[in-house]
Structures are given as structure tokens and as C-alpha cells.
Length: 173
Ligand code: ADP
Image (tube, rainbow, N blue to C red; front, top):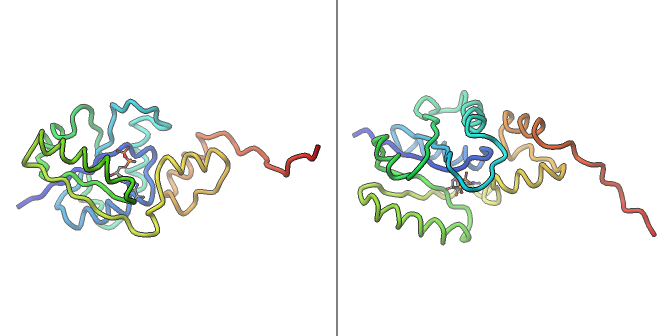
């Protein structure tokens, strides 16, 4: 049996948390498709093409990377997954706060495509606080995000975000 899993997300940008999940995902699937959502209503910092390129660059040389495909999709995830021949949708869980939304989505996807199973994996503890949104917020305020995102993303963030403003002590009045 050749098990194909789809790991969907916005990946804006990819973090070590996502990479941790990809490493785990290739252990349970023969082929893992990292699927970048293109039709998001939310504004993204990086374009789909940039997000794809950052994922590919970040995966280079990682064990199991030859069984990971990086692709973009639009429209219904379950339709995309079925077209890819996938039987598993992989999602990550960090905290209880992820649960409500993920539970709703998993049940809706099961309603739409009963043969596709959503599988949740817990992140490693050291990545449990990590999200793309927080990385962008911290980086835009001049905080260090090394150790949270892979080197190609660090580089891309440097080029994309305005240089940090000097933050001295506030002048006394
Ligand atoms: P979305 O916009 O769909 O939430 P993300 O790109 O933020 O997409 O995340 C894609 C998937 O990766 C989600 O299932 C999310 O829970 C998971 N994920 C994100 N960050 C982490 C992390 N630090 N550890 C484990 N899973 C994560």
C-alpha cells in the first residue's frame, strides 16, 4: 500500500514547528505532500511562489525529503487531496486553543470526503509556542527569530521587513 498524506497550511512562512511536523509526517506516510493554500482570505507576507520556494529551500538535505512534494492548491482541500490520491490529511496541534477550529474542520472534511482521515500530530514541546504569525510579529518589531525559522526564512524576513527601529529608553518628561 502506498500511503499519501497531504499536509496543508498557509506556511507564511514555514517555521521549525512545521518542519518538525513534516519530519514526523514522512515517518507515517510513503509520500507527504506539503500543500500551500493559495486562496486564503487573509493577507500573507509572502506570495504562494515565495512560500513554495522557502519550503523547498528549507527541506533541502533533510532526511526523508525525497518523499516530500511541495505544491500549491486552491479550492476545497478534500478535492485536492482526492486528486492527489491522498487518504490522510495531516495537521498539527500545539495547544488546546488549536483544538476547536481543527475539530470543526476535520469533521467538515469527513462530511465532504468520508474516506479521507485527518490525523493530528502533537508538536515537540520546544515548538509548541511557535506560529508563523508570532514569528512575523516579533521579526517586524526587531526581535530575533533565529532558532525559530530555518536559515532561508531568516534571510527572506530580513529582506522583507523594515529594519528595526532603535529602541532606546523613553525620554523623561
Ligand atoms: P493555517 O493557516 O492553516 O493554520 P499554518 O501554516 O499556520 O496554517 O499551519 C499549518 C499546520 O501546521 C496547522 O495544522 C498547524 O497547527 C500546524 N503548525 C503550525 N505551527 C506548528 C508548530 N509550531 N508545531 C506543530 N504544528 C504546527
